[in-house]
Image (cartoon, rainbow, N blue to C red; front, side, top):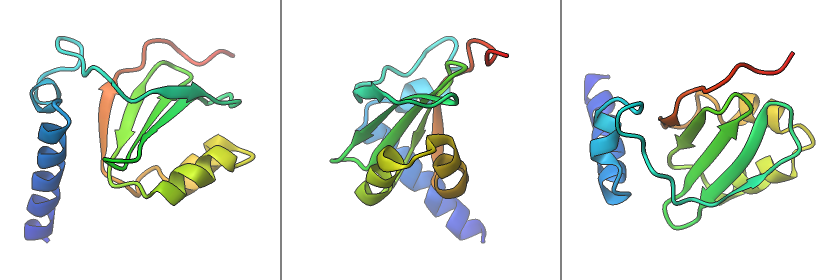
Length: 115
């Protein structure tokens, strides 16, 4: 189990280094924010504001309604397509993405969800 955890950490580190974001992710994102170069498009969701995808790196980037941005690594193109075509983006995210792919926080929550 420990070997698998270490292998996963090394894979994430290699991906971050290749994306040019390793140093920023090793420090606090408040002091050294990761700059996103993945274009995102707005989606009609009360929970998810925008979604972007890097086909070359298989990185899914999601901006939530509270301003938080997360990158999900090793996401197949089919999952991105299914998310974009899902009637409920939030439901698809919870059922198919959250907890299923390694993730890196790009930006912290900046506001509370509207009531």
